[in-house]
Length: 536
Image (tube, rainbow, N blue to C red; front, side):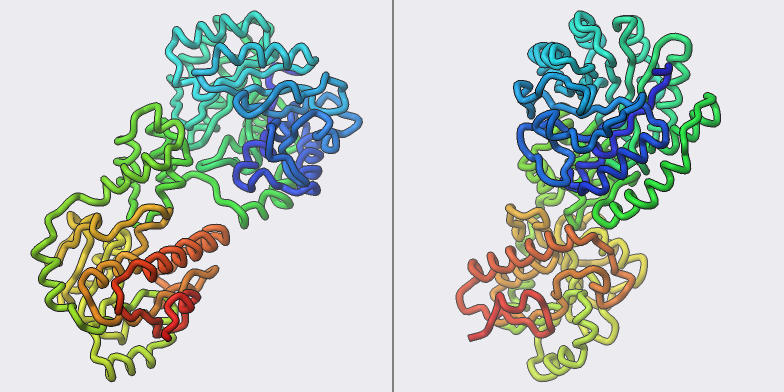
């Protein structure tokens, strides 16, 4: 194997996005295509105690993985990744040459002593050993030197610099490379596994190649189209272009591009990855992307809010994902505890005993305009519009609890003529007079999307002791065409749509079961949730 080797881990790192289920035909296609392109190392998935299944890149043993390994490997090496805390090494059979050739063993810093026996067993069973310490930037220099001293006794095939949270800059890589190079057994290679939160994966990989030139053999990790959680990984095709252009390598780039077109392109219909601002924030705080993924499901969270929440978490906590703590911190961020008693009492005086028509901005609010106007004419309700004023529909109040909607609204159209009710999470942004209601009065934990504006308004109206609530425009989500006005459209993938609909239904059922007795709630326009409030 030459001084620079490329390792593609699409079937492993990309697996997080598709529940590790690529399907047998895709797995075969990717492994064959990568080998045809000339990549030296192909990672075909995970070794885990649980989770194996048809079409999944998860294996309990070497024999499970044999179906994806060609009989004639040529010079290609095949690897799997084994998380020390998730795999019983006793399940791994001795090396036969018919399955994968190497095991990449990953582990947390707190496990760095106890994992040594795991390394030894991998080698004793005949496999090449890659040592993959999670979050190498989380080690002090002394801790890293102690780890190198321990692994040198085994002379692993490769010791990898793992930028778990995509937070490295060039000076960080230079410092860590120098420590590893000068203290790692000479025969061992240095690997580099990066995440692209700061858009540095390609630059850092090129930097490592330059740092190692003439000194050390290296292994660079990538994935096709950068497929991986959050911001993703180094795109294999980018580093191939660099190596072909600048280092005299002869990888078949066209073969990789064909693979991306035929296999990875359709993955984007199932999953989303790539750079965005929230994942940049995760990288800047050395935080696990799952924290950001969780927060992005909140309607009112902004990029600045994500930064605030991550900055509020202890450093070690950010590297994992404690959802209960995230929830509490998020609520603290949202609440901005306010004394809303005066405003609440004014609203109560205006709303008590009245019929209220709440208009959410779903498509049925536009399509059912005639029925809405007829109801207004006959029942003379108080009309409360949620997060937007729809054309041709009157409103007595504009209610806002979604900060993003509020900011867009204030840039698009002014609403000075309509009294505003806002929740305390957006109070500091308001530019007009408004009645502020404390969010803590309305929020209930237990759902990912607990800050849904319509649900919060229902709870407020219940507390204001209204007599009847007619609901329009609360349709539920489908794939496109969700809103009465296209400017509000925010396309979501199918998995998110299913989750949103399930949670809204759950929250509506909770409201139905806990609201005041005698409060009549019914849907005025078509909705997937209308069955929840069937009128007797």
